[in-house]
Length: 280
Image 1: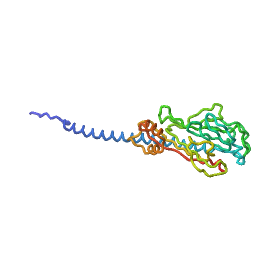
Image 2: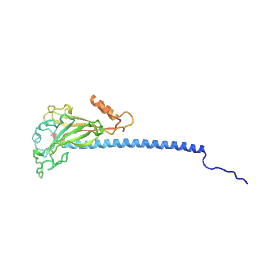
Image 3: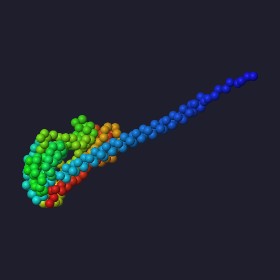
Image 4: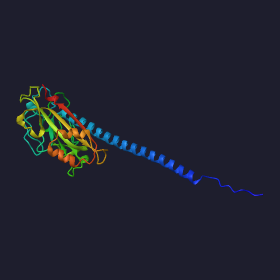
């Protein structure tokens, strides 16, 4: 009696077909993974830009809301805020004014009276001591809080390293401290009116770099900042946000940003703040 030997299992053709089908499935899954990872990075990067923008506007608006604050509303502006000469950081504060430009840099300076004894400034230092147990009592001149805010670009044109900084001019050791990072560019305009502080009307907005004390009292501050991510976070060559920003940029700024764009993601944050404490 003879037995015929039979071989069981997959044939070479069946194995090749299975490998081909598996390869297509693996390629599809890999592409889905890559697309999801790219989308995740985009969403996380833009979320970071948005968070930075919200934090920056919240903080700057909060400080601008304090500009010109008087603890005694009946005190004349000229008495509460006397003329202050220009220094290495700030331009001159005219009598009765609470905002001025930054000296040879992009930014602004504000001043206000502390609401309470030992109120902290942006450097975390307390204002000069005074008796705040009674309302509507003007604090001494020594307790006046004077702050300088400036945009500091990165020296190596790494836009994600640019920052907004603050310095307390009445601190024991005045120095600029970082408030927010990731600022690629910053624009600032001052809304001015007539010299008379009782006039409410804002006639025009002047770029900070062109403003002088002779242009009139600053009653409004308009700012916008371009926030940037790390390099190579953007797919494709175009960015609508960047295109719109560059449309009104100076030729020098256009050249600088275009040369160092490197496919970053961008977001714009800004606000216009009327100095309500200076309004009659």
